[in-house]
Amino acid sequence: MDLSFTPEQEALKQEALAFARRALADDLIARDRESEFSRDLWEKCAAFGIQGSAFPAEYGGGDADIISVMRLMEGLGQGCKDSGLLFALTGQMWTVQMPILRFGTEEQKERYLPRLCSGESIGAHGMTEPGSGSDAFSMRTTARLDGDDYVLNGSKTFSTSAPIADVFIVFATVDRSRGFMGVTAFIVDRDTPGLEVGREIEKMGLRTAPMAELFFDDCRVPVANRLGREGNGATIFGEAVEWERACILASVVGAMERQLDACIAYANTREQFDRPIGKFQAIANKIADMKVRLETARLIVYNAGWAKKSGGKAAVESAIAKLYVSECWQKSCMDAVQIHGGYGYTTDFEVERDLRDSVAATLYSGTSEIQRNIIARYLGL
Ligand SMILES: Cc1cc2nc3c(=O)[nH]c(=O)nc-3n(C[C@H](O)[C@H](O)[C@H](O)COP(=O)(O)OP(=O)(O)OC[C@H]3O[C@@H](n4cnc5c(N)ncnc54)[C@H](O)[C@@H]3O)c2cc1C
Image (cartoon, rainbow, N blue to C red; front, side, top):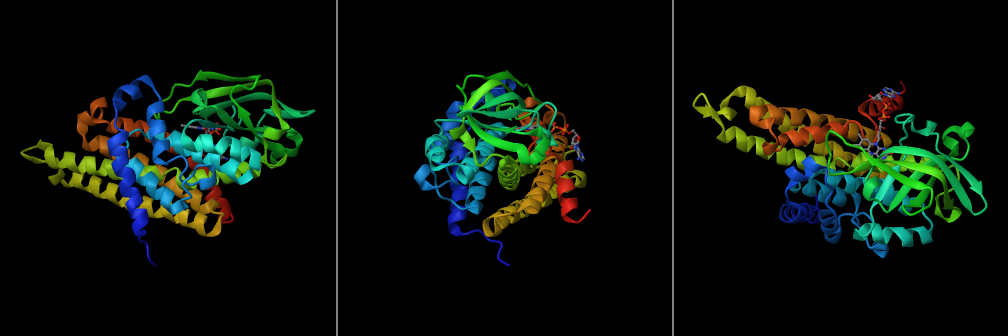
């Protein structure tokens, strides 16, 4: 069993790391405080080829295989401290661009993908509703066919990038009595009459990735903007979250490496009782545990990527990756704050921001409890 990356994949990671350190470092402490998204960094990422990386060249993409894309994201996560930016970027790639690529008509692909890949457009995903989160298919947003349009009514919440998005993938039911068989996906342009983007939702972490509610009031969406067949929304959603769960934490693996390096440097320089704190076994053990989490998280993420690359379906591998890496990331963030002592609790040392950002990882794209349910179901429980 050969677990090594190809020289090209290794080079990709190093290029992404160098790019992130060079081009994506700004006054993040201030932007995080102000909950400010950076369009400038978004466009730099697009110019470097991030948004397009996994997509065909004919739509402005980079045609990279999934392992290469993960390697790219790992380098980015290591070099860029703006976890909000990377979360919004990867969310768009897997839950907006990928569904359009996989289920869109040729006209839809040509219309939306090049602009999403180039950074000209930003995409958001609207599934969660105030009354339906984990039980996503019990949604109340309806779509009624009326001539050449569907008429959407209802609301969505927690939609990442909604305040800045130009286009939304929205799920609505054409018939609630059909359960998940009634769920249908639509591509909705921001300027569609009847769509209102609500207030920006303030949150604990990932503050540079804005989030908002969406309201649909007799919002007329042309039939030409339906994504896939009527009633195929559950399949489209399922596939999108599988991609997302497999890949979204690749950048977190990079962030874990960045955090580990910062903790080693701090433990070697901060002295108490006339010696570096790293010489205390209690601190050294925390750092050793962080290293073990990093290495196991990396293996599990690439295992999910490998499953997607070789077989296509990887629901269980993706659930395991999402569950394990998000929980490792949270634990390591807690350790990083503890290693930094009181300074770790201050904004200047930046490990407190990682901790706040990490809490989201066990919630978005299906909570840890839901990932455990998926794994247990696979085991026949
Ligand atoms: C940062 C962030 C970004 C997000 N971005 C988006 C986005 O772009 N688009 C979008 O549509 N949504 C988005 N979400 C929403 C996210 O998908 C939901 O928050 C998540 O699915 C959980 O739904 P909920 O918040 O309604 O919690 P609930 O479903 O109400 O769950 C509450 C608690 O009950 C537990 N629970 C629920 N059902 C079960 C069960 N069957 N077994 C065991 N435990 C259970 C949950 O695990 C959780 O602990 C985002 C969320 C966050 C935090």
